[in-house]
Length: 144
Image (tube, rainbow, N blue to C red; front, side):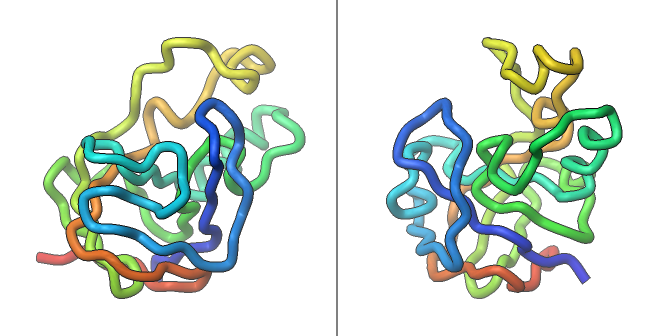
């Protein structure tokens, strides 16, 4: 079963996010109170704990949820395998995949430490199609 293991937020861009028990996701905006919210295609970022664990295996220390500035940390789903346009039901919300990975313009501290970062290849971005609350433990499913 795919599920949410952390909901993460930050008031400023360019910093790791802190975990919160539940977030309010707004249609065509993203996570309420998050610096990355807005009317654009990268409203919500998702990264799997499996990807974070790959970086840990490379020797990166101090990794935890939100460290890659992802809004939702997931478990049990290979996010990057679903093409742009895929619909994900996350709790009661509905998201549409808009981008897989991202270009890393400024190499983050993790890249500096080990010469690699997982977000550019395994992180994904969505826009919020149906809003609502998402909390830790909510199930993630693919909508056909």
